[in-house]
Length: 443
Ligand code: HEC
Image 1 (cartoon, rainbow, N blue to C red):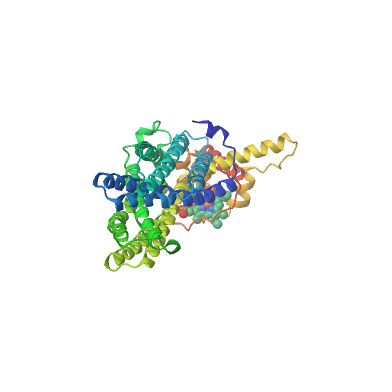
Image 2 (cartoon, helix red, strand yellow; image 1 turned 90 degrees about the vertical axis):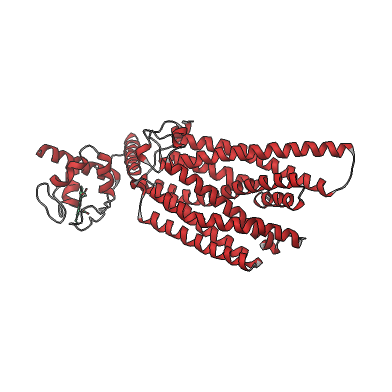
């Protein structure tokens, strides 16, 4: 499954920036769809079984509607599922190229499992639709009866396999992306099962289950009562049935979410934290809170219009879930990205040189004189600290020094922050090499 990494191409820092943007868009398509599909499958299978054992037409109708809302057309699975999942896998393979992380292999498995899950889900959905037609018809003959038996067999097996494959694929998605956000584990994790019992993955799995039940409940309410004027021929009894099976489930799963949002931040590695991660987590909780108020309002006093509000408010919280995920990924891969950009510039220069184009060589010393010497000296403190005081911690970590020089962060409270010098990766590399060399010589 490592072929993805092999076809990953060298990339400049501009490419990496674009990749992060693309990832945001991908998550924005993928997360709501996957969670809705998962929640809808769970609800549909549960109510179908309940309906068949108790001979309850409303439960059966409900199980059919829940899944029909999220799969109105076959193409939707490609558009919001397979294609973005595949694109996500490529994007991660690009970002993590030249690392030993198994993230992209795990994600590749996720895509394959998802394709299988999608095929079973579609077959489940069409079996449901067909049996719906037969349930209402009252022709009685042997052929129809045996066809009905076959149909319910198809429905049962495809429903079961859809859920199994989807769960496995989601596990791969969650495990692969959590691993990507934690560079310290890139080397150590060599098997996808090692992630099964890691706290961050468990927290995200529970969080995902909760939000998928919420979105499927609120979505069902919305599509039954409000979307395009609501469901045609809606009877009062069925309307009651829908409310009874969605409102309180929606509320309970909403109320449990803030805890898991907090846990999902707490279990992030320090390298993945940034201001944006906290802001996004706060906004997730904020919109979950507003959605809960709206659902609570409907339990007290139902109105069809309110179903739209609750659904949209929750969708907004999902937007910030995706921001939280991509923000933590981009801070945790920052160092590695600087490294990749640096390798790219070497590759680029090599390419130019092979075409006979020579870039005028600027040495580390030139850059030091032009860009650093105003604030730094080796032995004495000026505007910035003396190099001899700050370089020891970078001695064995060239990548870290590079990433600081290209993108200075606040370090020491006794100094003002260092302004970004706008160096290109190759320049940053030669200045980093130069000051390290001078420091080692002085030692
Ligand atoms: C305008 C002044 C200024 C310029 C120009 C400047 N720096 Fe700095 N530099 C600072 C200050 C201030 C700090 C302390 C920042 C802090 O602790 O938050 C610093 C800190 C550093 C550190 C130590 C970081 C750490 O881990 O504590 C390094 C290394 C460094 N600068 C390298 C460079 C290099 C290389 C250049 C030239 C490309 C450069 N600086 C240009 C002001 C400057």
